[in-house]
Image (cartoon, rainbow, N blue to C red):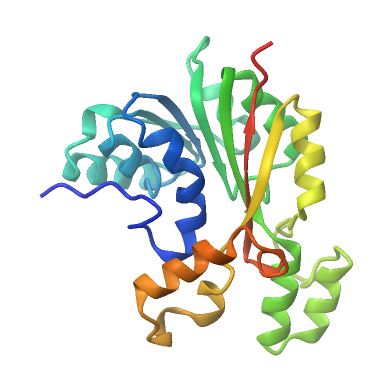
Length: 246
């Protein structure tokens, strides 16, 4: 049995805003060459391949890539998915030289790479002129709100001033971003950003056990995603950016 393609009307509520931005590009019937950086087990890659696109996923986890291939095969799209293992900031070096893409996904990757600006510059370099980058990141304002309502006011205040909320941790802190930072990074990479959306404005706050009707929650997320002040406190930020054709 094949997995139906995910669109904004079918996707989980927490990612519906991203799919709403992608739908006009990926549901038009024209096959695209797509790169999914850090795409793991194929949350986006498999539905895109099921829509007829050729998708390359670059990820550091061999286990995630194995799951990706199994899911793609189950969806009847195994021949349209390519998995490439690549490490950290050097993930793009694993791609064959000369690969160019119509659409690049970079979802929740900038939080953990060493140099976000360098990563975006590399992604811009593999986009064809006129191609688009789908960028999603953790939102600082949303992280502050989440820590506060979770009963961690000290951590919330640390995040408010861009400090590590848990400085005693063994690993590096994950970054959070605000829209202005994303726009500056995209401009520095020579990309032209469109309007930004909030990702999971309320879905993460409610949690899976809330009992909310999934269709109603998805519709609410789509209504709030582009509307301030609600989008300002979403869990994530999303923006589509274009590589200029000139």
